[in-house]
Image 1: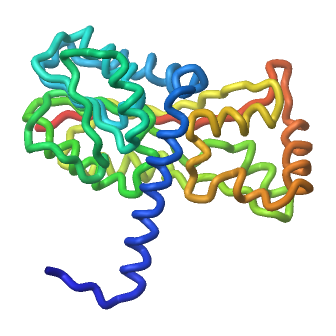
Image 2: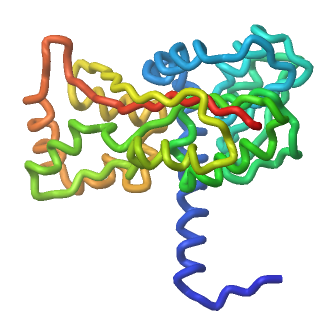
Length: 272
């Protein structure tokens, strides 16, 4: 047994547990409306699918959510085994409604997977890694469960996501917080330092448009993306601040609507 006497270590561990529990709870609550509301997730997945290998016999989908892309992969490859992993029980309950007899659903944390070594030759993850606190640990776990020659194909978000909110923050005195995503360069460096071979690493900005700034906030809540370590809604302390935020955001309106920019990373890694 290891005893931690350092209060800072204990506090940090408790904060991480609280954040993980919050993520699981918020995404569970959003499960029933997730696929309908999360256009970004679907748009990014369609791009990520272009980098899939020709064959895959054992597949793991990390952060599988409602199982939409897990089901797609199972139908595409007809593998021996397909496992969808998610930290949110509500998401897995929604995924089970597919009633697939070939897919197993697993409750688990991407940074500490309850899976044996070398179980898969394709690990897929679409817009889930950004919720993890330690990208190096994610890479370690993906490498551990992959067979030699296997692929880890994933998408995630980078530092310049929600740049409109960051722009408004500079104009207002009150703080509007978003998740502190790693920069593109930092994420690339971590991939290069990992045991993986980097086959493909690309960054691109994707913009989603909404009717009003309030619609944007409501959509983030519907998909569980208000599950920030410092959620946008929780950082706006009063009705006055919310009104001020919406007013500033309205000034960013384009002919297509209210923009929200995401800096997306698409990556393909292979295990030597």
